[in-house]
Length: 267
Ligand code: 1GP
Image (cartoon, rainbow, N blue to C red):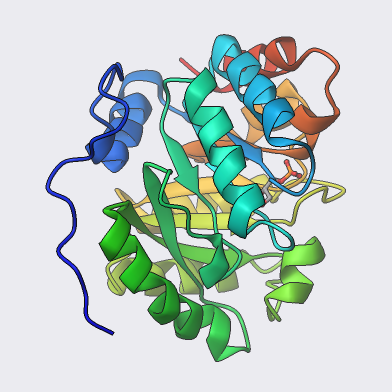
């Protein structure tokens, strides 16, 4: 395959309020300003693209800082493209891909969490999907944001699909070891994932131990965060970014639900 030159400048979205070629910098500025950022995860398999656009617009109105798009199953191809386009039409915050595999790359997004599932047993989720997807990221000119992805018990669907050797909830030292390995491998973000819909979020002791060790490397925490209090506990423990998906999908008042999360985590 012959690689094409990446576009120097994206042609789309000229009316955007922020420089979306620097999504990572945007996230860092929000963390610096507010102490913690909030990202809303939208799974393209869970609703129509139109509905995804409406949810994203309400989430932005509630104060979310970025929209993540992805899922472990059924989040590729046309449904992914249409979902990203619908979200971009209705919002002005960065849209960041959260791919389950190489199929989770869309040309219409602003950035992609270029992630390796470090505690997987399957090389496909550590480097192979990354190699298969990298030429598309290059060709589309999407900003790659390097991330160590670590799955903690119970792990849910993504733990099963990614064949993760789940980090036990009571072993923060194992999470610290993997997070540090990610930092030393050059990754800018570490994501502690309990699995979408987990009964409870990542334990605060684990969040605190990881953050204390990785220092400036940014810590994302997600999975099972259902209310403002849970989000607040994760932020106070050391999370730089909180991700919520299921609670937003289930909310009858998305804007109100996001306001609850945001008021729990921001200075
Ligand atoms: C899943 O961590 C995210 O990858 C979000 O989890 O759906 O439980 O909010 P929830």
